[in-house]
Length: 94
Image (cartoon, rainbow, N blue to C red; front, side, top):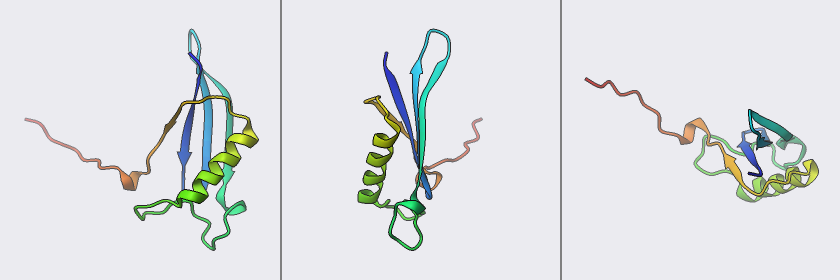
C-alpha cells in the first residue's frame, strides 16, 4: 500500500501529513503547514469561519501551493471537517 495524505483545513492554516503503513506502525513520511495570513489578500485572512462555506478558490490555491512546495507524493487524501459542520449528540439508551 502507498502513502495517504491527511488534510486539515483550519481557519488560519492548512496542515497536511503524509503517512505510510508499515508492517508494524504507521510511518510519517512528510508534513507541511501553510498559514493563510501570508497568502490571502483579505483583511481577516481566514480560510473558513463558522459560515457554511469556505473560500473555495483560495483554499484550492493554498492546497496546490502546499502540495507542490512540500513535495507530497500520495494521490489519496483523507480530510477532517470542522466541529461547527458536524452534528454531535449524546444519546441515553435504556
